[in-house]
Length: 229
Image (cartoon, helix red, strand yellow):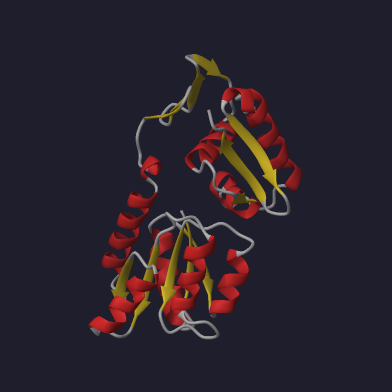
């Protein structure tokens, strides 16, 4: 998962990112609220970790902005050095889903992050078969069927298709797609992603008459839309 971390204490953000990376996530750290907001306007993230006392913009302001403009299921965890009940209530009232009191404990951080991600993205859990309408993804074998008929896909095409279906209705930035499907091979030409998207659209027949539409989002990325019946 792609996680954005806001903390002006470099040692703390480095620690958090080290723990999250070890747990299999991709971590992007920001030192100020304005820096994070600027990036949130351009990129997609699966979760936000926000230090309450952030510079430029407070943690509360960042969370309120996120709740107004980002997907409702986006999990937000806030971190604070204060343990008073009033501070915790204020964080939760601003829209956070959970909180942690510094100093951060590695095991607790991983446990809380994983719990929030499982709740926010239930279809991301390691199951062997996932169904979206007429499409059935078999995650262990990399096999995809449409109305019971197999669709021939490369592994990258399978991963890309499953990524879109797991995020139906959610715009995904090009950087997000790149990290999710191509991992750390970030030097691939931009045309490569577009070619794979075009193949997925064609092979899965992602057209309105079949209930789905895979559309570009101008200057951002792509979005898979489910058409109303």
